[in-house]
Structures are given as structure tokens and as C-alpha cells.
Image 1 (spheres, helix red, strand yellow):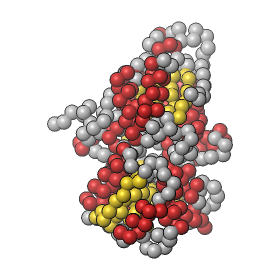
Image 2 (cartoon, rainbow, N blue to C red; image 1 turned 180 degrees about the horizontal axis):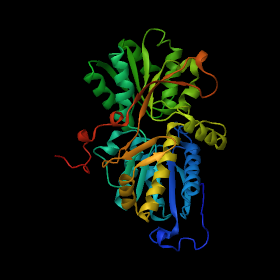
Image 3 (spheres, helix red, strand yellow; image 1 turned 30 degrees about the vertical axis):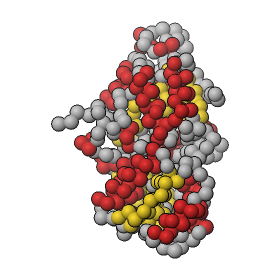
Image 4 (tube, rainbow, N blue to C red; image 1 turned 90 degrees about the vertical axis):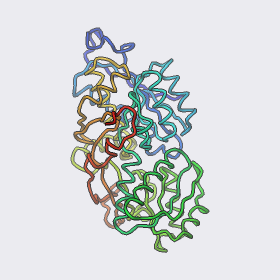
Length: 405
């Protein structure tokens, strides 16, 4: 198991002897970054998430003058629930990990959330999309930090239908994430007067989308909804471009597209794509300054939304550990919900009773090559979705933690 360790301590004298650290297990707060280090989501998370977690620890210790000692370890779950589950159990039981973060691939994220609950540990999920993490699968040990399928559907999906894209065909990755994204987007399409003329489930991962794209082309749907992510999304867009699908009048809807995906595609192929994210490096002076620091530590690669989420989630987790004077998972997650969130990347926000973290989302349009001023200058902001509109209303949640009236 590959690990990256970071130990930081301020006020080295009497390390953890004070009352403030009395309930920190082993005198160390240990955080595990669990994600795809080598597969289709490696650019979205991967080692970049480890960089972001380390930056969060450094920045928190420096700003708060905290005496917490923090270690970061990391592993590759290979997008497999059994692999991820085995790593999580090893971390929680033998390695004394207190919190696991990132965890793309919804099937893995759902598994880790359950293990965290069973073992009384903390899970701050930034990488999984399924809205079930703050819905029917929610628990008192998990916070869903960054984005979800409800947000994506009500951002990209609703905007496209409202502008005339009222007939859809879905290319759906055949696992929990793809199913949830298709489900939530289809509901939005139908609610806003559109129709779904067909859908096809694609193996995950796969590199050949030709037969699936030909089915979508034959459907004559105005919109081909890509309910996939990472390399699956970029490969399907590239192959659609090669088949001349967009030149034929059909449009692609990237239902989950990250900045590294657009970078991989190039603006010639990605231009005009509508997508929804909760972070972009060029939003304001603070996001630009942080992103330049991140890129310097990440081989020049600018941060994805997931990287920003890991940074923000780790910051708030450490704040809650300090405030509660414990790294007990259940107590710390409760404290995260109690404390307001505030950081340079997402601004002020909150964590709801169902574990859903609230902040604005943004509908972006990918620039034409002629509009870009350089590498990673890829998005125009089409609209800002306020925090209270970006995510599923609490009244509609089927989370068992939420009392129903």
C-alpha cells in the first residue's frame, strides 16, 4: 500500500500533553486520502488530492496555531468497492485512521460510508456523486462535501432543457454513480417538459463507445446525456467528435465534467459544453492565489473541483476536531454540522443535518479556443446557483437522520 506521510506540529513543547489534546487517539489525527491513483479518475483526484490535503493541514496549523499533530496517508481503491472496503477496514482497525476523505466512484463511497458508521469513524466524501450519500444512505458519520447527482441534474440538465434541449438519450456508466446521475437528470428533464427517447448502459471503465454512440445518433435525440465521468467522458466526447455527431446537429451534455477533462480534450473538442461545478480556479482573487500555490506543488497542473473539495473538507474537519477536543468520528461529524464553514475556496456555508454541505454551484460554458488566454483558461460563467437552490431541499430528503413532520 502506497502511503504519503505528513506530520506537522506546532508548539512542540509538551506535545499533546495539554487538556486540549486529551481525547485525541494516539495523540495523532490521522487522515486517509482514498481514491483512484491510476485509473480513469486519477487526474481528477489521485495524487492531487494528497497535495490538497497536505496544504489544508499546513494552512490550518499556521492560521490557527493549533497544537494538533496530523498525518496524511493515501491509497488507491482502483474504483472497486471490495478493494476500497479492505483498505478502509485496515486503516480504521490497524492503522488508527480517524477520517477518510475523497473516495470517488459512488459504489466505493457508499461502502466506505457504511464502514465509517459501523466503526464510529469519520468520512468526508468529496469524490462520489451519488445524492444517496445525503439521502437514503446517509448516516451520522458521513459528510457529503462537494457536489452530487441532484445538483448536477438541476444545474446542467435543467439549463439545457430550458434552452430547447428537450429530447434526450443517455449514455450511462453501469454502476451506482451512473445510475443515480441518469435517474436524477431524467427526473429533471421530465419535470421541465422534456422527454427521454432512449438510454444505454456502458461497461465501466471502457475505451470504446462507438456502438453506444451510434445508438444515440440513431435516436435523433437533440441531447446525448453523458452520465459518466473522467476518462469515460473524455473518450466518449472524442469519439462523438470523430463520428461527426455534433456536426450533425446533436449536442452533448457532459453531466459530470471536471477541469482536467476539458484540459485533456482540448478546447477544439470541448468548446460549447455546458457543465456544472462548485469550484473553478479563476472565480476570484482568493481562488486564483490558492490554485497557483496548488499548481506549483502539483507539477503545474491546476486543481480540479475535487482537489478544492479535499482541501476545504480537511480544513473544516480539523476545525471540528479542535473545537470538540476529540477525533471520535461520530462526535467530530456532529461538530462539523454545528460549526459554520468558511474558507477561501467556497466562502461561507454550512453542513446540514443530512450531511449535505451547502455552497453555491456554477453553470459554466467551455470557451472557444479563440476566447482562451492560456492553459486552464477554459470556462465562462453562465450563471451562479445559490447554495439554497443548488442542492436537494432538506424537506425532500429521505435521509433517516432528518425528522419528518
